[in-house]
Length: 398
Image 1 (tube, rainbow, N blue to C red):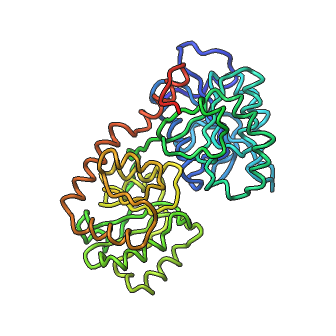
Image 2: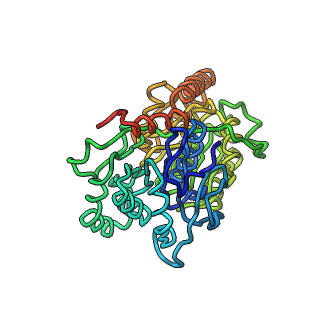
Image 3: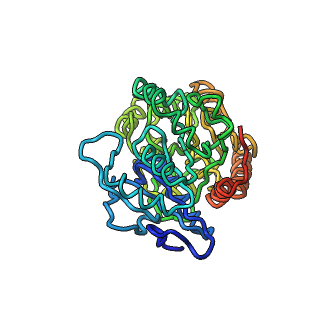
């Protein structure tokens, strides 16, 4: 990989693109958007380009005096203003001046963040191509949090961001754009995110989970967020009776729900022998968990993309998900699982039982999902589509 030596220089000698990614965080604890920033950075480098992430010091990522390779990502982390919301960093504002001037293209991740405004400001000053990656923040579902503040932002600032952008990246045709005015729809570019399980470390899994055939190992992987409905999954597991021959594993950090809460509910429902709540694993441990699992389950209300679902596909898992997951469209294309219209108790229980009773079909679904994901949903494929847009080509526009 090439080092980010271009930072602060005006030219490169080999014709590679200098890509500046601006993200409020790259911490693994901050979920999917941070994962995509890190993964795209690595993919850009593997394809021979020079990418640098400008971010804030957060969750184990320390402030850096100069760009460095950290956690598999070329980054420059700036200090945050103590106590300020939205990861505000004055330090980043001044560093961005130098970085944007040297870049060929700038991508800002998020929307309602100071880092996005700073990136757009300096891009306009130096006339650099500026792209937005909203990560689902235009969806009315996600805009319910701090709704009044976001409406004020839309009225005062958002129009300027949309107008200044060369393009607005969304991750699927299903990604909702409720807050994007119609006159900016021509700037939308659909570029699916990717997944990568090549970085694997052995993770100790419960013996009770490994004791059942892989096709009957069901896994929930992700934050225990309210919208992902982990309690509903437990209730459906009880209703289905699948616990007599299968095992359900929860892997992920606490959210609105906690691991202790779910384990207590499993005991109340009398299904604790067939349910294990394991807690979070690191990025390398995800691969180990998924490769040991047979069915990935996500009964969510809404998911902007669903990187964990694509990771499960790459691991040859069959999928049980709701259509609220944007990436579920790929499951449908390859016939890699069962999709539900909404998180419904009885429908979920029926689907769990159907999968448990169809071992050969679960294996076939997983193989179809894996082949499709490895052909179309790697980070290299995603990065190539970004590069096509940067160089003036077009992907799917809506």
